[in-house]
Length: 461
Image (tube, rainbow, N blue to C red):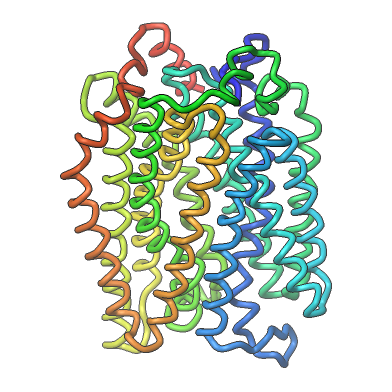
């Protein structure tokens, strides 16, 4: 990671490299979330008929889903190590793109060997791409630049624009025309992402290089000198903040698993005489992020400029509580189903709305927080560890989904809601002590009029 910011090219008040990474990640997420939207449905669909699946039980499908989503992100740790110690982030992202194109392409082949080979390649590709492309976003901004959080929110909108389009397009093609056509379409999206990244290399030359061979003397020295006490304290804060991340994603990732199956089996999806495919509901979260992303980022930035509490930890705790409260709507959905034999779609929409607001308060903020606190030589490794933690959260989500077969959805959804809210309240009790250990890393953000104006210009775009 480099803190040098290119001055020659900006767009809408941000480095043009941000938008190269935006569209690369958009197409990568198009491929990943498109495949994710139909994976569980493909596994549980009957193995006979016009569009045969594998005929697995719900428990078997959720178990594979949990292992797969966990390994996708756990592989971010070796992906970060390879970047920090060998290739640099820029080359690691390129390798990840190539592996993903191959993985999604192979999934289109209707053979079990191709199914498992494709999943393995996708796991390896995401592991190389995810921690390193996010770290490169942070490298586009100087330390203390108030635009950094907004830049990550813009980047995050790119993630969810891809997820929104894929849930609609790939989900529809997979359910209606054939699962493997859907997998193949996801591969085409990843190929477009690779093309965007290769074309935009001219705008990324100043970020993502291997610091061991950097032209910057400070960066070369950072690769070998021991950590200071301040750096160790900041790493400690990051590691503790990851507890929030595990709990958040353990709950949130019910969207692709248990909530996806609940939508398919127990939700009345008829609208004006047409039955909405279950996979389409996977797009609601992404749609809300596109609508509300910049507004929530602006809310927090204005709060910061007014001197009110708006630290990263504060935002993340608030995000967990709001997201957890969204599961009370799923409690309402299951109560309605038990009473009438069907539940209305509005319960899902309200749950996804709260999940989205919570996600926008936590996820892009956490990405930005890591790039602020992580020592230079461990930038990608700490980002990789973050994504690995989200992977453990996804595995937890899969386990909770499996338990629903014995405990029932009502207890699972209600239990998730209560635990998330109480855990968030508990973390508030430690917030100030943790913020002391950041040694004022966020105190200077927006401290100058020039930085504040820069943020406003970006928001008016």
